[in-house]
Length: 268
Image (tube, rainbow, N blue to C red):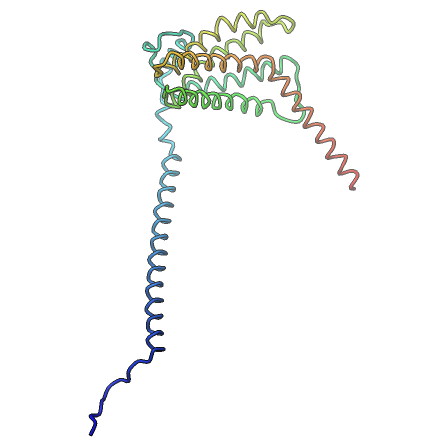
């Protein structure tokens, strides 16, 4: 008599294939779950780092040391901005209080020059345009000098260049003040005399600061030339071209407003 077998029936090939598929799907689900969890952890870590960065840069305490300057130090730096020295003898202690006050003074002088010249802007504000021009020129030229220093192997901190260039604009404020008081609109000799007397030494000092870390003589000469050119071109633009560009922009805005009003009338 054949022995009788008890227990489960042997698996068929279909059942074995189904069990293999179920095992693979479980492994894939586990892998997908691990990847999703890893991605979630990376996202949380990245977002936390970004939030911490914004919080650190948003604190006012980060900028407080650059505005905590004694008036005597600001006065000394203003006077030294007119005196070029050897790069080894120039000591730069960067701050943003003095340059910010100088830029605001330049804005006030531009407004005074425009109003004393009888120039009236109908479709905009003189103050907003002057502030945008002065602050934008200060930051953009400082950034361009920083890039030039980086390319010509004279590494300088951006804050040092920003502060030094801001103090060098003291000469431009002095030139704008004197030309607005004593300058004749028909003769520009007085302006060029002031330019050579005050702006050229300040520009030369700025060039000596930016080339301080460069070891190649050719790079030093290039950096000095770039700094002097940027400094002098800015004051020439403010003296000759600022009011012209402003009047042209005012005319363009006025023509655009007239065209828009004409279109509205035709549509109505």
